[in-house]
Length: 53
Image (tube, rainbow, N blue to C red; front, side):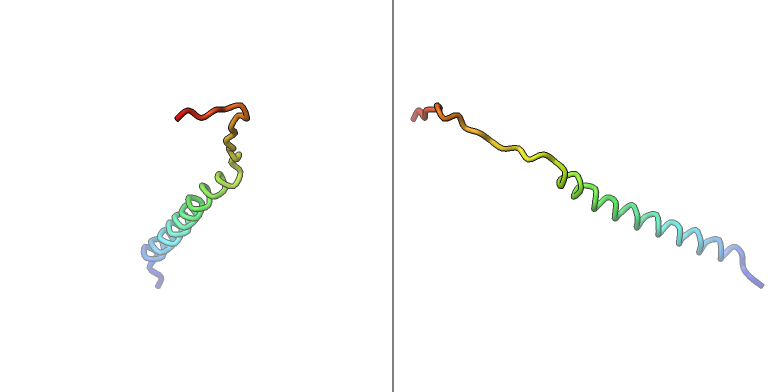
């Protein structure tokens, strides 16, 4: 006969592993996506700027 308790535990473990794997991948890809779409900041120096030194 089947041991439904063991099947339930295995199914729950497999579901939890799938969820954790998905969250781990999303956490790794998220920062890369935001950096990919972030605007690039460019520093500009005025032509009339003088150096004092």
